[in-house]
Length: 299
Image (cartoon, rainbow, N blue to C red; front, side, top):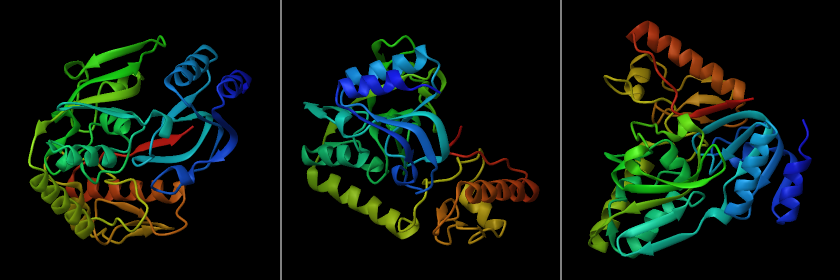
């Protein structure tokens, strides 16, 4: 596959562009083979040019943020990393606009500093703002859809457009962005004035719950499975006697059965084999078909 045009664009704007980059360090699961080309655009202009070039030349591409909900084997194409250069945050009264590459935790911290409430339940969720909107991330009863008002995106024609929240089809762990392939550039969220002490207390409370109940000390993709219609994936997995079950370096967490963790040296194949085993056992014993929450990339 020819990548000369991609490399030329990156060189023109002095953006990072490297061949055969290992993706393991780019994900929270610490698993990943190589991609053919790794590009880190230094501005929205470069990002749009890269997207257009990939589409025009039929080059496969994958947008990568903080890599917190992604299991990657490898990628034969271009991985476009949405990092620090798309990480600006601006505030206008009760409205926060954050670049897609911003850490969601840092944006929650900004809300705390200016005494705005509405993001407490999202505090502690790893990943980027763009990724959080893409999957409508949420926890403890709060979701991105509760605060998002609009987003700037690159559509399939390479145009920068603004889409209101009402057109995003935000639902449990899903959105229109997983359907239309649009690339999120920035997200605008509207919060409410609050008491800084109360906001911090709530954030601290929920972070402590995470530390107590989740295996944060091990690499993972977060919750491995979506919540089934009736019940919880973690409870079903535990009831099937799978807590602590392992395949190679991948293991069902002994702390929280809803997490598949990398105990050390886990491979893509280890995780996939373990996930398949969990799904089979839960299907056979409980009659429930579990669906992965993490995005699996094997191309």
